[in-house]
Amino acid sequence: MLSDAQIKTFRERGFLKVGRVLDDDQVERLRERLDLVIAGQSQSNPELLRNLKGGDLDAEQVVIQIVNIWEADDLFQALTYNPTICEMATDLIGTDTLRVWHDQIQYKPSRKGGSTDWHQDHPYWPIIQPADLVSAWVALDDATTENGCMRMVPRSHLWGPHKGGTVGTKADDFSPDPDLSLLPPNESVEIVPCEVMKGECMFHHCLTWHGSPPNPSDKPRRAIAIHYMPGYTRYEPVGGHVMEVRVDVKPGEILKGEYFPTVWEKGPLTPGVRE
Image (cartoon, rainbow, N blue to C red; front, side):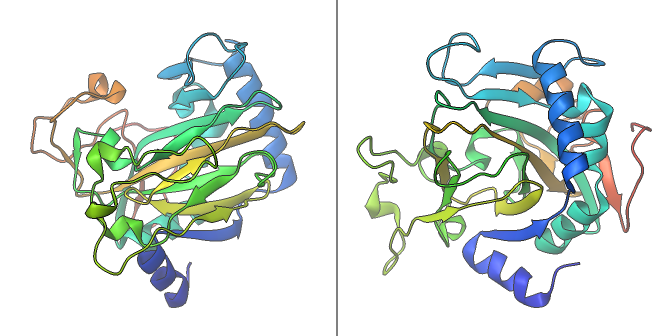
C-alpha cells in the first residue's frame, strides 16, 4: 500500500518509482520465459511480436516489442495479477476495480537497442476513454542512463493530449521537441532520467511525456510495462489499435472480457479464470 505522500507525488508529477517488487529468482525465471517467447517456443503466442524500429529482430537497430506476453506465458500472466503491483495501481488511480488493458515488453538489446521517441501513451490507444490509466514499468535488467533508461517530464500529464501523442524528439541530444505554444502558462519542460534497477517498478500516467534513448552499452535493457485501467474504462473507438480485434463489447460500454481480465476487485484476484 502506498502512502498518501507517494500518491500525492504521483498525481503532481505523473510518475513514481516504488522500489523492488520482484526478487532475483523471479526476474531470472521471467527472463527465461521471455527468451522462449521470442524464439517461438512458448506455451502460446502473444498478440504481437515485432521490431519497433522496422525490419527483423537481428536488424542494426532493434527494439523488441511484445504485446500481451501474458497470453503466451503463465508466469507473465501471474505478474499482471501481482497483488503488490495491483494494489499500488489502484491507489494511484483511485479505483476498487482494476483491469489489464494490455502489457508490453520493450527490449533494447546491447549495442544495437534503438530509441523510443518522446510520446504520450493514451493518444496511441484511440479506442478507450477516459485517460485515467497507469502503467507499471517493471525492470528485468538494471535500466540506467548507460543502457537507455526512460526519461520523464514532470507535470506533463496535466497538460492534455499533445498532437496525437507525438511530442517530438531532437536528434542531437534526445530531448523533447514540443510545440511550446501548447504548454500551460509558466510551465517548462524538465527532463528527469529514471533509473530503475532489476526487479524494481516505476509507475507513470498515460499522459506523461516519456521516451528512452538508444542502448549503445554492453548490457541489455529488458522491461515490461503493464497498462492498467480502472473498472469504468469504456470502449470508445475513434481510431484503430491492435487489441481492437479482441473487443467484444459495444461502443460506450465498459471494456472487459476474456482479453481484458479483471485483476483486482476490492482486493487481489487469482489468474486462470477468464471473464
